[in-house]
Structures are given as structure tokens and as C-alpha cells.
Length: 371
Image (cartoon, rainbow, N blue to C red; front, side):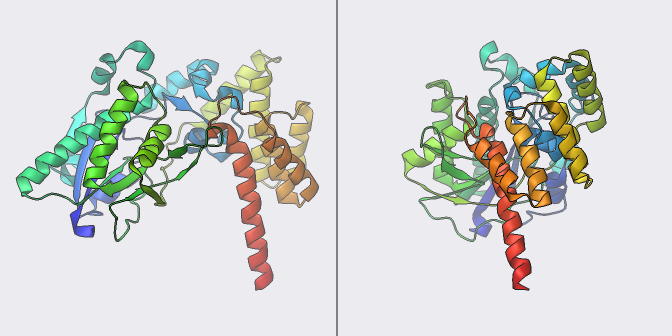
């Protein structure tokens, strides 16, 4: 499969160019690369925002403190409009490096995202699934051009985001009924399969079928959740999902500028529980990272309420670091019983993060005992 694999790099280039640097250095010299990207370097300045995205742009101390009430479209930006204006001015206006992209591949498509946005009705402009499908379809069109010029047809096709931290480790083989994604599992609320979009690899005909399914789901059935769309295709096509480990590179926003804006917001609105909880969790997380566990706990105690999942996560991490198993169990139980108003995985982030940290600590303890 290695010699008959085409890699479609599609989407928005972000501040981190680790993947593109690797490609430019010949990271896929033995495979066909095709790029369909937008013309400006972007950042996570639109679309759905949750704690996982904030961890990438502002770091774990801030991302894991992200209040659940801010998850969704536009809530976070409306909370701190001046900060977002500064980030947009700093990170959202630089042209992509066209010369580097041309050095990576002759099969290159660079477009002005603003022109595509103008073709969409206003109510659809926030949904990233339309952007993902559009650039994926454009890349498949470039693939057909490459195949015609080379008088060959690639057996397998992969679609990856340009903001990955590194190239994935490709499987040696891809069966006719297999599809490789970065994650896939049943949705807790619906029981239906949902899957990631950071990397997708399958036989050529499967990937073409995926693009057609995405188009129908978005434009005919008004489905806007890309993870639901991909999972639905996997189930409909009777495919077996496999996983490829990958991660998105950090896309750093100015953290101190953010903290200054958040402190100003909390000071100007002392009755704003959301801002107060956000700031307290950030400060507690930073104190914990510095080893000041008593200080971290005191910050959260002064907050006066602990029903917010981000607060429970902060308390649980302190308990884990200090060996307080009962408090850790209490925090996990509180997170398990926390409401999930959207039914989406973003609201499960806090419980999953704490359970994952506890599982890792237990594995490390077992390894230490075995030595």
C-alpha cells in the first residue's frame, strides 16, 4: 500500500507549521501529496469551541479550567470580545507560504476562504463541516488530475489536516472493508458511532463514497456535526474502523493577554460566577503545576461553590497529586453525575481527563512496584 497511497492535506493552516515543515523536508517523498488549503493562516477563531480546543491554543491550565457553559458557538468570544479581536488581528491575517507549498507538491489548491463563506447562507457560516467537505472534495478533484497525468490510479487515499503535530504512522495494509481514523466510539447519548476527522485513510473508492456521503448529509439532511457524519458513513458502509495515533499541534494564543482580559472581566463583574470560576480554576491549576497544592486548594475554597465540572476537575487533580484517594473518588463521582445538556463529548471532557490521569498514575505506580 505504501507505494500506492495518495495523501490529501486539506483545510486551514494554523500558526504551527510542523506538519508542513516535515512534508517540505521530504517526509512523504515516496507518496503523492495533494494540498487544498485556504489562503490565510488561521486559528481556532470560529466554529465550535470547547475545552479540548482551548487546551491547544491556551494550554492545559486554561483549557481544563474552561467552564462548560462556554462550550459551543460564539459564547467564549462574546465573553471576551476585545481579546478575540487582538488574537484575530495577530493570527488571522498572514498569507500562507505559497512557495513552500509549491515545493511540497505541484497539485496545489489555495483559495480565499472569505469567497466561499459568502456563498453560504448566514446561518450556515459557523458550521465547519461545510468547509471540511468543500476542501476534501477539491482535493479529490486534484487527485483525479494527478492520476490522469501519471496514468495510474492510487489504491488508497488519506485525508489529513495541515495542522497536525507530525505525520501519522501509516498502516502497512488497508483492507477493502477497513477505514482508519484517529478515534471512533459509540456516542454516549445516541449509541451511534462517531469518529474523528484529523486523519482518515481508506481505499480510494471508500474515500470517494465518504465525500458523497458528507455532501448529502450536510446539504440534504442538514447534519452539521462532522464526527456524526463520518461515523454514520462508517456504519452505513459496513466498514471496520481502525485507529491511527495522531495529534493536532499547539496553536498558541497570547496567554498572558488572555489572563489579563479574564482578570479585568472578573474584576468588573464580581457577581459573574462564570468568570470567577474560570479565573479561580486557572490560578489553581497554575499553583498546582508549581507544586503549591495548599495554595491551589485555598483558591478553590475561596470560590465558595464547587458544582462546576471545571472546578471538580481542578479539585480532583489536586487530590490526585497529594494522594487523597477519597477526595479524588468524590470528584470523579461528581463529574459522572454532572449534566450533559448537549449530549456531546465536550461536556464529558472533565470526567474523561480526570479518569485518564488517575489511570495513568495507577499504571506508573504498578511499574514502580515491579522494579
